[in-house]
Amino acid sequence: MANIQQARRLLTRTGWLSQQAEAFQQRVLGSCMLKRFNAGHVIFSPGDPPGGIFGLVEGAVTVTVAGNASGPHLLHIALPGSWVGDGSFLAREPGRIGLQAVVETWMMRLPFDAMEEIVRLEASSIERFAKVLLASVDILLRAYSDLQDPDDARRIASTLLRIAPEPGTSIPLTQAEIGAMSAASRKQVNAVLQRFMSAGWVKKGYRSVTVDNIPALWRFAHDQAPTLR
Amino acid sequence: MHLPWGETPRGTFGRRRRQPLSRHAGSATFLAHKCAGLRLVSSQEIRTVLTRVGWLSLQSESFQAEVLRRGRLVHYAANEPLFLLGDPPGGVYGIVRGAVTVMLSPPTEIPRPFHIGLAGSWIGEGPFLTGEARRVSMYAAIETWAVRLSLEAMEQIVREDPAAMRCFIRILAMNLDILVRAFYDIQDPDDERRVALALLRLSTDTHGSVPLTQAVLGEMSGVSRKRVNAALKRLVAGGYVAKGYRSITVRNASALSELAHREEAY
Image (cartoon, rainbow over all chains, first blue to last red; front, side, top):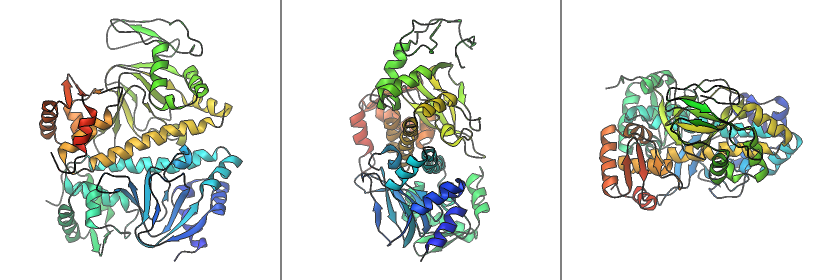
């Protein structure tokens, strides 16, 4: 369970808000509410009216887009320190993405009205909020580029690296979900994770994977000649 | 090559003459020029294209006029870079005629094509919002004319009307939509569907023809050259697309979309 002091400490130490001016940080945190979401709780869905932004304090949320008949499509999983919003706060349009808690999750929520008020007080704040979207651009550019790699094992390694912010972080994703994010089948993910485990780079848990050796996995993902053949 | 007022065009092809157009109200700063053997890009064409499709067409008339008044027409030969990853901050580009390829260059890796911007596309908003260097590279895919709105011009517009900031942020939101779609498309496990999805993403209602080699299409859909060849052959045989010299034209977008979104592999 997270408390408001922990939330403030974490979000001023890492992620988007920590890179903003102190006065802005205080204004944002002063308007945030700490909220708890149960595992599986749908925080918002594509098409919802404009909402605010969320700073993740504890737990994990999946970011999805409306998919075809097979249901929502997994884009990313956000871990503590990340801020997520769907851009609707800038465009003032219904949102395009969905957000769902994977495990019990605590987030600081900055409501849409509070964002509007912060921008009204200081017009340049909108540039700061736009940077939340730019962070999504960076993640998606990287994700797309990762998926252009024709090698299954390297794609899976890149996906794990994209999600894990630091060694020892548990990623609460099933093998099928890791597969969806790396354009690989569950079977391929299973085989590749076995190899990574034997090398001591990752650990598998129940519906989760932990990356222990980021540099080794990074070298594997980026080397033209894979070392695990 | 940038061609603001007063600069002499230099180029890799043909003789070119710079020739001011008759000035349309509100677009006096545009330089119109003529290239030997090429059609003229008129202020009228610029206005028609950019206010009919893409981001600028969705903005208010007064904002459109302000952007067109402050923008400059720039010209690039095929393969010429508009900007490169790591370049110092610069403005946005609205494509008037031609096409640009956006390249991603992750650290230590070979740059890979990510997107092709056709007429009406606006690209390059990142530095205005972050003050940071370019995150992607952009090249002219073919000979291209674009309107460049410099950082200074964007800042001036926002100084005069702070609400204009939201208009510029809209470029980011629209490009984010493309990215989301691209990532979604490339997650499809079926090679041939990925090729169809990439073609649908790149072509637009107004521009079915995309300047695209098979190699680039392969990279953009994460498919090997050989398999792109096979997939394209089937798409051509089915009447969905037509192949030209270094270009692919979507002939029947709705049928292609149906094919691409079919649950089973085709």
